[in-house]
Length: 155
Image (cartoon, rainbow, N blue to C red):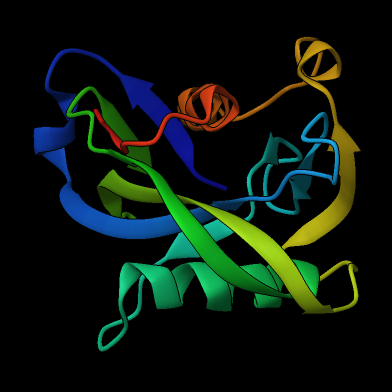
């Protein structure tokens, strides 16, 4: 399980690790799909690290399928999140500063289900999320997605 360290420019203690997450709204744009991580029991947007040879968009599509069983189409870049003030430390000694591409996506197929990385999933309103243990660095991605701005956020 990764632990997160916060502090001014603490990211310099690690390496950059690009990844992608997907935000899916229900039909009324009132609820968002969240998953509960197997490794730490916390809620988050589905997503994960990019593999060499794939784009951020492809990483989002692959991670959504791997974690939720859903086939998706990326419809919009919500934002790029690169804060140098977060360091993720893993039990194997890896230390990373996440570089996250957050996309809005729509379901095109598949069946929502659990995976090796996900123990639970659900559709939640913003109000419901206030009392949930959500990964800190996913909260701005969710807020920005809800704002539904035409241009991507760069943070």
